[in-house]
Image (cartoon, rainbow, N blue to C red; front, top):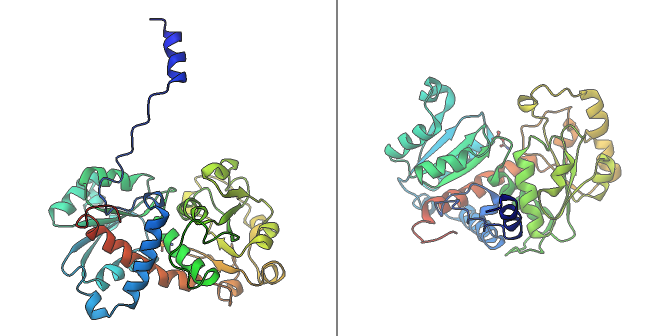
Length: 341
Ligand code: CP
């Protein structure tokens, strides 16, 4: 057969793309794309219900169920809030961190996951420096896996807690949420977009509820390609123009640990992209100011703005515990309920 003719035929009739098997487990949360808008709405409703539940009743929901937190990267907010969330539901948790476990001796992610499963873990919450690690762990263990941040890829529970924060301020009392709930809302995500799993998960989630996402930063930290990550996303290089259009401004830390030789003039960066009290008062006096943390005061944001009345930074952290209660509950109960929640 003429190979050229075969190739042309292939282009005209491309083979069907096989359906993704991920997530294997209905309780897993690997990406915000695992959740339909309806599922997001149900999770938000469940978050509020769990938050308002009598702690003594809540404590029995996952009584004695075993959850492993597997952290290959440092974390304050995500790790603590997952642990508190799981404990609030009565679950037993154990933390395995790369610095104090056999990971230091060279044990692989697969073997660590299988070991945790053999020890009785019923779900694993994973933070890892490699993009895609949560998918690998899920494929190997078939346990519910919650992605607590994989490299520069995704951080789905951060996007959910950010969404809850945005809704509380800009659409209070709205439930259920749908594809139009955030219509007319512009969220600017500013700074080190290239290395940010928070930015990616937010830009994949917020437009599906109707928000417009503006990405803002210098070329080194924000490639043009980012605007093609999905619908509802645009690039605005001029920080002040972005702030002027925003109802929510999400500032990001420059991830020095992932810059890999990239040289940035930090004084120049501050001049162009620092969120100062002056800029905020002049351009967006009613917008909310968000940050996933950790914040670097005096670099991407001034101390005055971080501590100011427009800041929702601490509220985001509190929402992290609430959202993660619903996500952990879903992880362990979705399989029993026979489908994706
Ligand atoms: N937002 C966030 O992921 O913070 P930690 O790295 O402290 O978990």
